[in-house]
Image 1 (cartoon, helix red, strand yellow):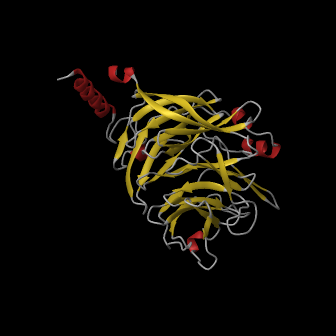
Image 2 (spheres, one colour):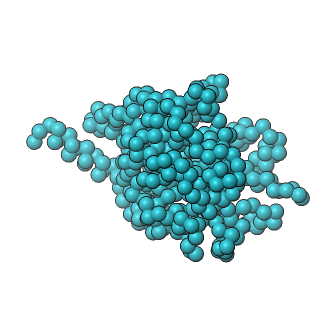
Image 3 (cartoon, rainbow, N blue to C red):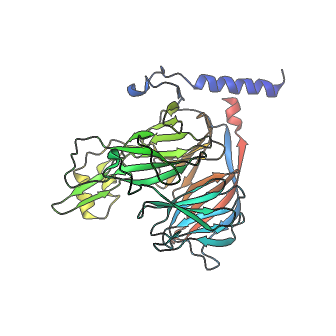
Length: 397
């Protein structure tokens, strides 16, 4: 047998040994009965090293300002779409970073925005959400002209489960349907003992929502300040959230950020499989939690808040067009994230530490798009070509 074949067999055996069934020791009790769960070990060796080569850079030149980036996607031709929540528009660039035109503007008319968030691109359209109006604006990719407005919750449709809820995100399916995420607003007289849940509903392009949710998800933690006259809600970086992404094969990927656990569901909400890594969550102290805020009211709330013992394991994640998971993990160094790149089954491909000022926003066609901020606050979008170089240590281990 040739050396290359022997090495391939050894690598396969290593992967089979390192992965385990859900009967593996040290597995959290609530995961032991989870079906189709792949458990990896804490000391997995990355198979590759990441190398990035700069390909294009987008900044505030040419009189096109980058205000507050609220989304970044690319289409099949490599054009770059960046939503700007300050200028209330979507800027379109060539694959080389040259400005083409803007879509939308501030306003209440067709194709206009009060807020612009959460970009999505399919084969024919680019979409962006305006949560102040509970709509999605859709623009043709071929002409870059406005097409239609999709309501996220129609006034003529009443769904009892959604009373007190509002839409926060969406995912576009290849079936011409849309998955819409809803969270519940906080009220003055809410019963804090009641478990809060979020929903994902399926909708058609006319905004007609199916009567039953696709998924019911645990609501993210939030800190609530109630007075006699008001309710204030603020998020906390040390509290868990529940993040969702849509994979290229239309699976809904769900992660509760206090664990390195990813569950995959089909587009109708049927559970299919999961994978898990034991992860050493960073310890959290009250002093460190207080240091996140300057507002004295917020600090007062933190003093009375039942803090978790640790930070979340994961800050955020995305799934690229090849089904690879890009996961930003929280580590001891407060200025850094350690990014894990996994294949679609969860095998560890690579790890790379980048500063918080360099955030992976999008990956497609082996190009990585990063939002980068310098010490003066200047924000740029940098496009890098991605190279995955074989890690010699992965063969030895």
